[in-house]
Length: 458
Ligand SMILES: *Cc1c(COP(=O)(O)O)cnc(C)c1O
Image 1 (tube, rainbow, N blue to C red):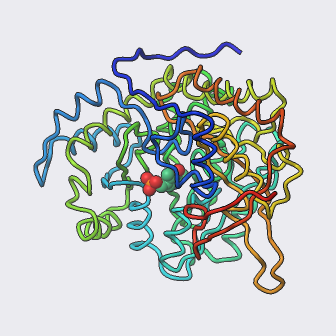
Image 2: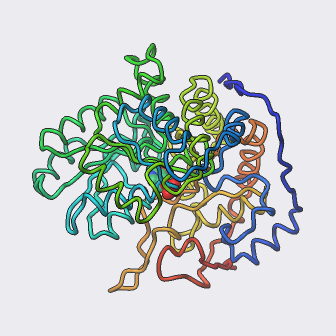
């Protein structure tokens, strides 16, 4: 494959520390084999997340100096509002400091306890916010979406038959809102087809249910539509984005992803009554409606970032980086979730380390090995994050997949950095039968993967 060239040159650089293998072996033990507990100055290549880790452009940095920090009516808010209206077509634009606040606002205002929210896959914070308000978060993917090897151009599609059946069974009056997450972060960064968004919208609207997109990676999704659906090969990204949003009644957004900034988010919607109630709640928990928990300069950086992210050469390079990792992994026969996603590669640790059973955390063992081998930080999405003991039998219940997510920050790492990551994985793959399983030494009652401490099993 010809790698798409970087559509930028470098004006400012940040040195990255490189520490020796001996030190890394010591550090991983001290951190209880949990890379969340390692300080970032000990990490060489950080693929923990693509959220808030983007490099801003010179134009965005310049925008910070145009920050108008007036409490009310900052000019940056009007740029922000105009940019988002142009991109999405939605009427009301509510700024927030990140995505999950948007979810908190939305569900606390429009949902009652016991009500249900369907989605292709709820992201963790979306599910947590629905559940914290007494709602039920329902994931509706096609069964093949969970199979790492199943190749489908739009593996993030919402299951339309299951959606309609669920609405009939639950009753539309118990579903205040339906969602679709683009791209599907929890399901491998896989895109959703335009036809699928349109059909889901028709189903939702037939029953009078509004549709909101969780739009964190709307531009990456639009690139997949353009490149994988022949009907859209000649349509501009901006037109594809507008069409995607035209089927929805609003969206939630973490600008830390496709906003190309380090902090920020927004809610956009057409319903005047919801806008009024949510804005009142915003004043209570975030700030006045023209800044919503952000500085004026942040709003300016977001509006400039949103204009840059729909650039086709940027997206070709961005998605091309992830595809290039996939191709390099193929060269070594290293198993990963196919096809490569939009913002991350998910290594299949079940097949990478078949000798380690789920209760010995194979994906976490691979995360630790990757740190020791190359100073690289990925994240476990497997037994440590989702596994649990059955309350009755005490038997370990493993999730379906054991994955290591390598999320690629936007405009931060070069192809050589990524090649280095793949080479480290290849080194581990050669001696994979020597990697040992792990056992828990400490776990918190909830969300244990953040703070757990583990030890190697001899
Ligand atoms: C990151 C993310 C969120 C939450 O956004 P934060 O800015 O981290 O609060 C919600 N949905 C999806 C799909 C995400 O990727």
